[in-house]
Image (cartoon, rainbow, N blue to C red; front, top):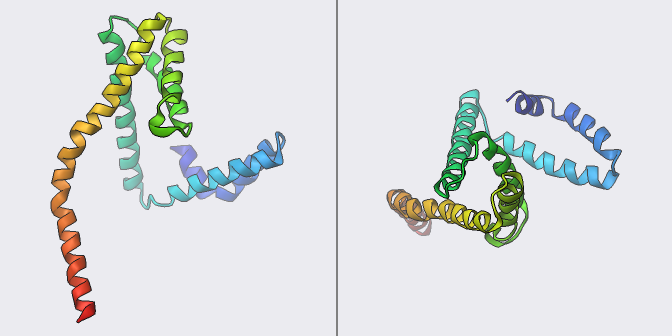
Length: 174
């Protein structure tokens, strides 16, 4: 939280330090990272109040906790007893895999999850592969099942927006 506040309040100072550190590796690399960081900082400006920041932070943490529980539950369902705090390693690995741009995260997400489950947790290869695919299934099934339910609730709002748009267009044409 302190990092985000400082990043937002002292952007130029932070960028100056950032550039000095990463330009030692390569100027081109530092420029690319700075561009990514600037986009990230621009995204922070969408949060206009402390209350809004707290809500975003709370729901982000809640989302990550649910993901952590899902991973842990699947591993437990296969009969392996891995401490729940080890799931943080798996979250970091799968987030890294998901950040690699491939369609639907297929392949890179699985590879990083497998590395975590097999190599870090010591679960046998065949079991690790099965766990990875069940985790992916669980991760996609929840939105697939809940998504249409939420969409039904939004239909009224969408139809109201479309009706207002139609009304506005009719006024402009008259």
